[in-house]
Length: 295
Image 1 (cartoon, rainbow, N blue to C red):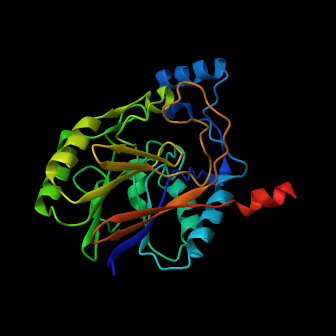
Image 2: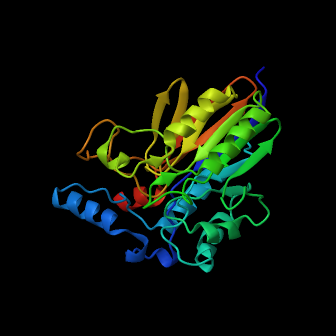
């Protein structure tokens, strides 16, 4: 029988705000980004988050779904954009209030909409690498390497420094045989869509080459950011993005530039790491509040 080493849930892009406020905070957005979105709007292309209910309601439903899983999990991994453009540590109390009801520990990662220094307040005991929010979860002979693509990103794009790449290279070389999952908020691959790829990912090719050339037992790279369940296979390695529990984007990979009518269900990934391979089970659900509103 296959020995399971690690079972965890990946969530992403919960976009919590204090009091479910949705006001635009211009100081979080560059002129370039604002102009780009305005130009899309003129073309009738909407890339806003498609949602029916407040983020707090959506994420409490997410917690209920995770707690109701009919098997034990080790932890929840949040791959970024926990909040939408917070300015202070105090605003992250809204995150704690929602996720304190989880039955398992939760680990947070940095997304482009997070306040990375403030995000540290949610995990004061986790040791990170240098000035980044990079860290490793090791358990039962398996590991998840969590990389911070926000601190060295520019204008909401992803990015890694040379030091981060070297840190990853050393980790992979130190134990090539250990079953390994890599997690990073921004998908470090092209998604074949002008809007999804507009801002890019600094050193994405270097990251991919580092993983491939290491010879390490890396099974998958987990990401969020695009609010969609999308899988990309490149050079035999799976890069997978998870949908948001709050809002889905009506954009499809490799179908630029238009959006397409689509209302995806909220959901998360269940990741099961064994000695031989890694399984990823997509878990989608219909928010009960949305269903009730239709009756």
